[in-house]
Structures are given as structure tokens and as C-alpha cells.
Figure 1 (cartoon, rainbow, N blue to C red):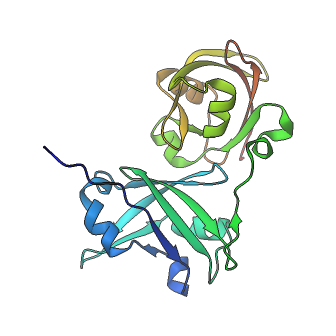
Figure 2 (figure 1 turned 90 degrees about the horizontal axis):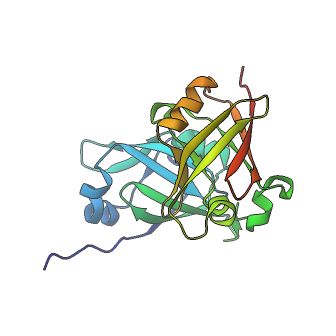
Length: 222
């Protein structure tokens, strides 16, 4: 029978100034999972605060694997410094959940679900990134999906309504291990017709749990 290699997790300490610009992946993890994680160049990093970061692999001439493109922004956003510990849980392919610990090994950015819901009014906020527009999708906090959209189903169809008027039905929302996303042609139509741009902040508020209707408010980046 064909054997299936067990997913392997790993951790990295922030130990030098080099870690500000790129992060080296441990040799053993690279050796065991190289073919799987290099199926594409993109990497998804899901942090305990439910933020999703699209990064890009870099392979050096000697075969070592690094997180480089997008890593400096990640590093600065979480104010990483000497002694911080990052624990990477491999969710499959090039998707990882990351837990961040300070030098005293206290976990950071790990809120209870209620704290992530804005004002307890069943809403969440997402900042539009370039990769979201290129791939015609937008990430949804997985805890929001499981709590308010469906605790059992892997996919539902939502209705999106702009606060200023207009409705887009049949928008797919799917959940995977560790993340969820809005996707499909109807999501692309919503994105195009409302002229979403990089840096726009979208607030999604569930106003009808039965019909999965979400009101969307967009704060424009410019």
C-alpha cells in the first residue's frame, strides 16, 4: 500500500537581524515536505488572531527554503523581536497556522471568539490585499463561519447587501481546515461592481442568520 507522510509541525525562534527580512525553514521539514509545499509559490499563514497572510517561498541556490516576499510586513505587523517564538502547524500543501509567543512563552494574539466579533454584533472586518483581487476571493474568520454561518456544512451561499443599496445573491462561502473564504463568480461580480481596491476595509455584518444575509460597508483606501 502507498504510505502517506504525516504532516510535520515546526518552530522558529527570532534570533538575529536577518530574521527581519526572511525566515529560514528547518532542513528536516523542507526535506520531508518539499514536493508538497512547492506545488505553488504562494504560502498562506493563518495567525491566531484570524488574520491570513499570503507570502511567497524563496529557494536558494543550495536548496534551502525561505519565507521572504511578504515576510518583512508580517514581521513588522506583529512587532517581532529577539526571543519571540513562532510555532508553525502544517495544515496541508502550503497552508500553516502560526502561534506567536513572547520571550516569556506567553501566547500573543490568541483572543476567545467573542472578542473577535466587532461589538458583539455578528460582524467581522477584512482589509483587501492584492492577492485577494488576483485570485477573486476574500478570507473570512473561520470562527465567524462556524459560529454564525454553519457549524457543520463545508459550504453555504450568502447574500451580500451594500449599506448604500444593492444586493448580490448566491455568493459562495466555503470553510477549510483553518480558514474560510468568499469565492466564486458571484463574489467576483460583487468585487468588480463595487470596485474593491487594495487597502479597502470591508466590514461584513450578518443581519439575517437564516438567509445568510450580510450587510457590507466599505471604507475606501483612497
